[in-house]
Image 1 (cartoon, rainbow, N blue to C red):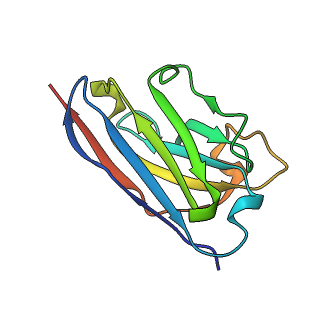
Image 2: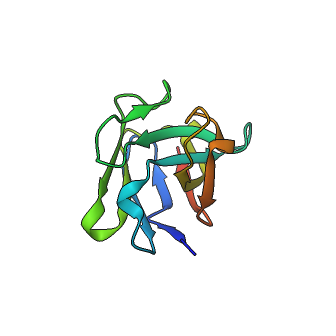
Length: 124
């Protein structure tokens, strides 16, 4: 049973940075594309970023492009989300998730394993 555990959330002033980490259990982590989603006050499990199993082909939602970077370390079974120049609207609960091929990877329904989430709060 694969489990995902996020960490690194917290409270930060607008313009600041946070680095989220997601630790995966199991020995098949490097076979799967991974994604980050967030639940905000206006939308549940909204797509943020995704990365191919080999660490390439990273894609982002337009609102975070140029500010956020998704990466992974397959040897450590971890995926990261570096968030810079944070804005008030970035506040929310951030989830990492494992992609299940077959659906568009922008859709939360395309992901079959989810972490419990980590809270990010951006303040003025």
